[in-house]
Image (cartoon, rainbow over all chains, first blue to last red; front, top):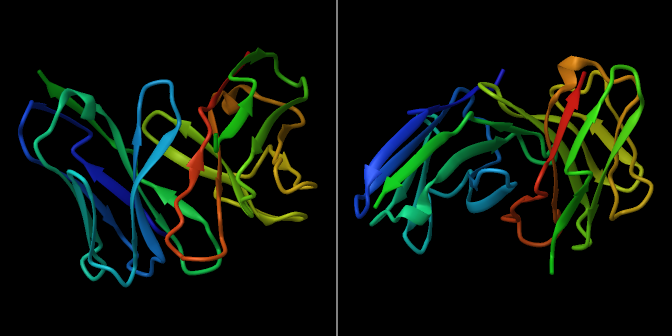
Length: 113
Length: 115
């Protein structure tokens, strides 16, 4: 059974730091992996989606990598800002066509001004 | 504006009183899904739908029903709610045709408390 783990559960960093959030999964037979941001009282906003055949995706200050063989993905945030404070979630979708998703429990990030 | 709309946003009710949480999307997406979010457990998928009249169970379907009679709507029905269904619920939609890298779009959530 697929399990998705995110460590650490919470993280505080000073503004301007580059940081890495981790996501690991137990079954490498995934279709894609998606990173989300969740603000308090809000739904999830999609940040980056990596197909199983891809190694990384970039959007602005965000870079997500995927290593299927080791069951890992990282989300790199460059030059962090207080506005980046949120909970970051990763989710893997199972094999093509099923659209069943397994989410990690998230990393709660606080960027201090 | 492209969006997924859930109603109500907040609901307090009692055990056994049937309730429906509505979800509507205006993006003509084929795929829709319901999740519940609980502390320490993350988001868990309840049901999903690949298109009109096509629904399937997620990981935690017990105690819930769904229907997909129209493409834009995907209501979540709790026939006889119980306290263990107290949770934060999210609806999501996604386009399934075209490029494969289509993200899910989420509603703002429905906080449900069952006493």
